[in-house]
Length: 269
Image 1 (cartoon, one colour):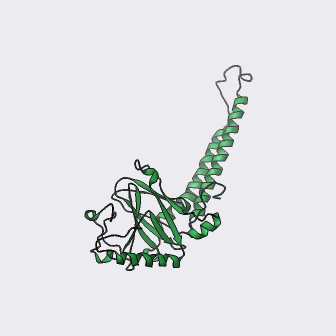
Image 2 (cartoon, helix red, strand yellow):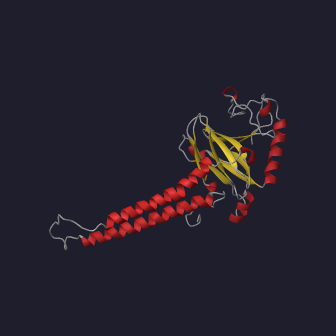
Image 3 (cartoon, one colour):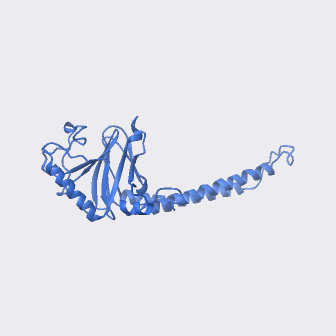
């Protein structure tokens, strides 16, 4: 379906469902385009001047157009009620347990994505506006907090394991941004002062996608889908999907680097 729609290959568990709904909507749009186009051509001939030299104030008696309009409304209702709403409800209401998912906090800013992972203790450390430093500590992580001492931060780099739900808590430090992962079929606005959760399950590792696309340089791209300022064009991040073993190794590597950091400093990837 994604090749038919010229979309990036779906790489999340719910991706095929989204593509299916998009495909059905396109089928309806094509039917409407050709159907109403044919009706327009018919009307040009049926009501041409040569056949109707004088105005007929009684007009057409047929109710065919009314029936067609009702049919279109029914189809649209089926698409909305039977497909779109259940898919939306699943993404909003049926969140996995955080204990069974990879949880990451994402802080958007002009013009970068800041990622915050809990350490081995599974707890997010405190953050404070007073500790924000755009050069060394963009999320304001308080390393004096015991829960924060093993936390991991990265900039424009999101790492997740394959086949495990990922829960992202999105917020913004300045203006409204929009976190968009096209291959994962997820997009969510980030709003200052509000933490908005979203979730998906990656199903294809970065290495596997590189083999499928025959592109050793391929990376899943994180785009900002909301015009957020003059630097909007360069607000670009990347997602790496690992095997579970690869993700654990990456966490161990980052934890070792954090432990080597001087007290009060933050680690950037």
